[in-house]
Length: 532
Image (cartoon, rainbow, N blue to C red; front, side, top):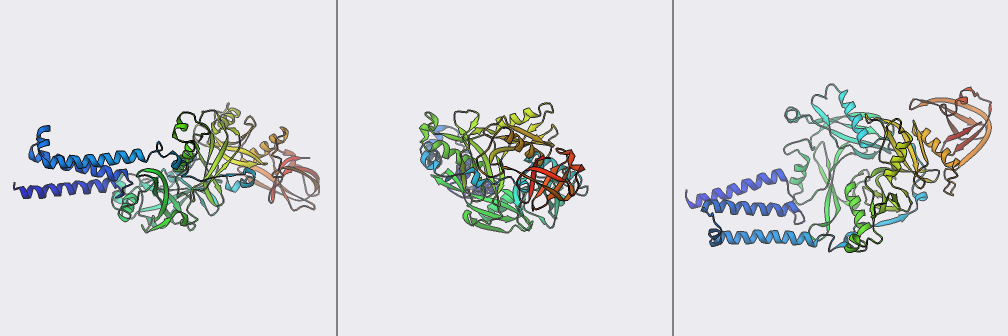
C-alpha cells in the first residue's frame, strides 16, 4: 500500500476511534475536566501504537531511533506531567485555606429559624418507602407495566407547597425501548410525602429526553452536544409549578487550580418533553427549582469548611477545632425550598453532636445551629428500643421544633419496609422517646413526656395551656384510620382536637357539657393533652 494511502487510512481510523470514544464517553472539552486530559493521553498512545505497528518497531532501541516516536512520547509525557502536577496543586494538601472558604456558613438560632411543627410540611417517607409505593402503583397499571418500569431517582422537591418525590418511568428493556421510543415515555410518578398518596401523572406530551434513551435523545448526550464545554454534576428530575417535567443539570465550577474546589456555578434546565434548554447562573435559577446543588456536594463542602480551616496538617494530626458532618442526611421543606439536614460532630468519632447544619439545595445558603445532643444513629437506636419486641427499624431522622425543643422525628418500618409507627426523640436528652401510630398521637405523647420530665426551652412557643368552658359545637372525623372529635368552647375561637384512642370519654360528650382542656396551642387547631 502506498505511503500516502496508509497515512490517510491511519488518520481516518484515529478520527473514527476518537469519534466513537467521544460519542460513548461524552468528555467535556474543558481543561478542568479529567476526562478531557485522559482523552488526549489515550488518543496519543493509540496514534503511537498504530505508527509503531506500521513501522514494525518492536524493540526499545528501534523506538528511540524514530524521531516521530520520540516526539510523540515526549508530548504524551508532557500531558501526563501537567495532569499529575495540576492534580497535586489542586488538592486540599496545598490549598486547605481555600477549600475551607468554599462554603459560607452562618450561625443561627434554632428557636427563631425552625418554626413549630407543621404536619403539612413533614415528609413521612424516606426514599426506600417511596420506591415501594411507586412500584406498587406501577404494578396496578396493567396497560403500562409490561412496557415500562419506575426509575430509581425519586427526587424530593417542594411542589405547590408540599414535599413530594417525583420520578419518571423508564423503558423496561432495550427491546421495549426499540418498540416504544418513537412515542416516548408517557408518564411520571408523584408521591405526596405527608399523605403517602401516590399518583401516576399521564402527560399530554411524552417525555422524550431521559436517562433511559440510548442514542441522541439520551439526556447526557443531548446536553453534551448543546454544551460541549460544560462539566455537569449529578442530574435530578423535577417538575415546575404546572407539573411540566424538567431535568435540572448543575454545571461544575472549579475554584482551586485545574481540578479542585468544585462548586456549582451554573444550572441548565432541560424540558424533558421538548429538549429545550435554558442556561442560568446559579443566583438566577428559578425559585421552583429545588435541587441545583447535589446533597453529596454540599456535605463535602461543609466537611472542607469544618476540617480545613486550621490547615491540612492540623486536620490530620492535631485536629484542633475540627468538625465534620455525621454519616447520613435527610431533607427538610422550609421557606419553599428543600434543605439538606445533617448533624455536626467532632472528628474524634464520639457519638454526640455539637450542632447541625441546614444547606439550601437551590442557593447553597448554609446555616449552622449549635445544639448539643445525641447523634442521629444513637437516637435511632433509642427509638428502636421502644419497639424492640416488634423489630421495627428507624429511618434517618429529620429535625423538628416541638414545644421549643429540638427533636428528632423518624418513621419506624417493619421488615417489609412499610411505615408502622412514628417516633420523636429529644436531641439533648435522647432517653426521652415517644412513639405513636400517627404523627399527631406521637406528638401528643411526646409533649406529655416533656411536661412530665420538666423539660422546657424557656420560651412561650408550644407551651401547654388550659381552658374551661361549655361545648358549643362538636364534630367527628377519621384521620389515618383513627377517630378524632373536634370541640369548640363558648367564648373561644380555637378548635380542640381530641383523639378517641387517647380520650375515650369524649364520645359521651354533647353540646352544652362543661369541660376543662389542657392543650398545645395551634393555629387554628389545638392539640389536646388533657381532658376533664
